[in-house]
Image (cartoon, rainbow over all chains, first blue to last red; front, side, top):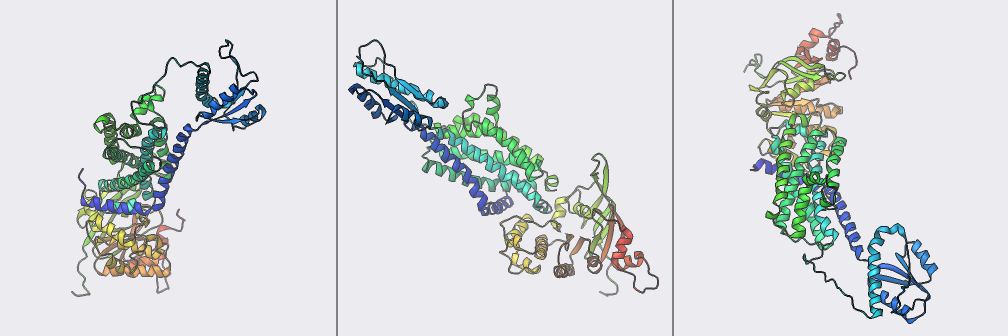
Length: 367
Length: 263
C-alpha cells in the first residue's frame, strides 16, 4: 500500500485532532490500567497464608510441639484461642479453618488407633477448602512422620521445564492488551464516523474532491499511531509497576499489535458505515465486542471452553490477535512460530478492508 | 464596454429536466419526485437565488449540482463539465457552504483552512482568507467560539480555499440577526463583484429581492417562476390597481405557493 502525500497530510491533521482530545485518551487508558491492577492483586493474593485457628485442650508437650510445627510453617497463620472464640471468628470469616486438639492428644506413637482431630470449616468456602484441605493433610502427615521418626518413602522433586514463574496476570496481560486494542480501534474508527456524520462533517468533506480511500487511509494511519501510543503506556505500566515480563521480541509483539489495530479499525469502519446513529453504533459495536471478550481466550484459555464452541472461538479476530500476542509474550515465540495466528489475522484484515471499502460509500455514509 | 449594452450573458450552470425520486415517508414502496424535471440556466457572474417553502426541493437540487446526491433524471453541467459523469472534476471548481456548519473539534480556524486547502491540493494563507470574510485575528480561535454570523462567514472562507468559479450557499442567513445578515450580504456582493457566480437558497424575501440578480421560485419539486425580482413582482404580485407600487416579493411568493403552512 503506497501512501500519498495527501493521505499523510490528512493523517497528520487527524493525529492532531485525536491527540488534542486528551480526555478521551485518558479515559480509554483508565479502565485497562484499573483492570490490570485489580487482576494483579487478585492473582498475588493466592500466595497469602491460610488463617488457621487452633483450640488446644491438651497440655502435653506433644500437643505444644504439634502446634509449634504448624506455627513454623509459613503456609499457615496460626491463632491460638478457645474453641468457642474461634468458632465465632470462623463464622465471621476471620478464620479459614479451626483445628481442635482433643484433651487426650498425647498418644503412644506406636498405637494402632488414630487420634481424631476435629476440623471446623465454613462449607460456603468450598472452592478454597478443596485447595486447602490437601495442604493441611500433607502437613499432618509430615508431622506424624516426624513423631514416629520415619522418613517418607517417596519425595517429589518438582522441576519446572519453563524455568520461570507464570502468574495468571502474565497469561491475562496479552489478552487484555488485545482486547483494549480492539475497543480503542473500533471506537476510533466506527464511533468517529458516526460522530462526523451527525455533525455534517462527512458531507462537508464530500463536496471537496477527496476520495474515500484517502479519508479512510488517513484515519487508519492516525488512529494506529494513537493506539500504539496508548498500548505502549499500558505495556510500560504492566512491565514496570506490575512486573510482567514479555519474553519474546518487542518488534514481533508490536507487529501483531499493528496488524490487530488495522483489522479492528476496518471492522469499525464497517460498523460506522452500517449504523446511522450513535446509539445504533453502540449497540452493533457491543454485538461485535461482547462475544469476543468471553470467547477469545482473553480471560481464560480457549481450550477450557466447551468442545463445540472452540472452533468458532478460535476463528474470531480477537482470538488470533490475543493468541499471537500471548505466544510472543509468554513463550517467546517468533513471528514464524505464530504463522497460524498471522494467517488468521491476514484473512480478517483482507476481509475487513474489502468490506470497509464496499460499505463506506460517500453518498450514503455522508447523508 | 457600453454599460447600457452588457455583454450577452453566458450560462455557467445548465440544468435540463433534473429529477430526484425518494420513497414516500408514509409508504416506502411508492416514490415521489422531490425534484421534478427542473431546468435552469444560471449565468456567469450573477447572484442566483432559489426560493421556495420547506420541502420544495431547493436543497436537493443544490446537492445534485454539488455531486452530493445522485441524479435520477435529466442532466446538469457546470462550466461545461457534466456533474453526473465527472463529479470530482466539478467538486474541484465549486465552493460549497452547507446548512450544517460544524467542523472537527480541537482544530483552529487556520488549521481547518489548511486542511480544506489540502483537500484541493492547494496551499493558502489563512490570514488572507479570514480577512476576506471579516474574521481577522481569529486564526487561533476554534469554531465553537464563534457567533452564528462568524460561523457562516467562516464556512464561506472554507468554501473559498479553491478559488471556486461557482459558490453555493444553502440558506446562508437563516438564524442570523439583522446586522450579521447585512454583513453577509455585503460579503456576497463583494465576492460577486470579483466575478464569482453565486447560487443561494433562501426563505428571506428581502434577501432575494435586494441581493439576487435573478430568481427561481420552486414548489413541490418544480420551478414555478423564474426571472429578475422586478419582473416577478410585475408579473405575479396581486394587483391593487390604483396603487402605483405593486406590493413586494413576499406577495409574489405567497401568491404562487399559497398560504398553507409547510412542515
